[in-house]
Length: 261
Ligand SMILES: *[C@@H]1O[C@H](CO)[C@@H](O)[C@H](O)[C@H]1NC(C)=O
Image (tube, rainbow, N blue to C red):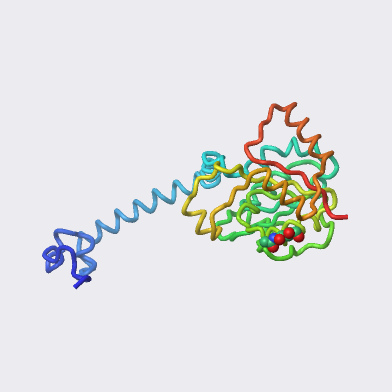
């Protein structure tokens, strides 16, 4: 009953009224209508291919910019000069943790005297060629940040996390944040969205499994105190001064924490 075609009269016998579907159903492979249909499909595919081929990376970046409200990963890229002012020598060996880590790592690698690595918490399936090359060199790896990070203590001078922590519940934060403090020697910088700044987006939900939970700065500070993570006051102050000098207003919350010693 429920599977009855909506308009049975159009399906029976004549491929004429719905050319493409009709031709396929009657297996009339030589039908001129089918050929025309295939040519049209081919043309559409070519147009799609041309667009995605020419605009790949820049389109992606444009999307991030448009939704800039929630992409703190994009913010990290903007803020590298200020981080360098605040952290100086501690920008020698940087680990970035967060979605789109390839974009941050590539940018960091362009800096003089900076080595960079990345942990992508989600999948790297749609990675572009330059990202795949970073993965094959072992510079970027995919790892579930709910589990211990595959690095020794103090492997990096600085660890920068963006967006990633917004998707973790306190239970997992309790495991992941100490990990960031463990693998760093001189500090951890956390970029996280402001509450209310987020626009839910279906693609993102399917990628991260749960919506971001954007917490207030008082929530984070209480959380850091509770888990005995200390603010890196020197770096905070230097970061603020450098930001002021460059008239930079963060669109994300930025926290500077000390590493474990
Ligand atoms: C996280 O760790 C803190 C401090 O050790 C503890 O008070 C809190 O109950 C933990 N939260 C969860 C959800 O496990």
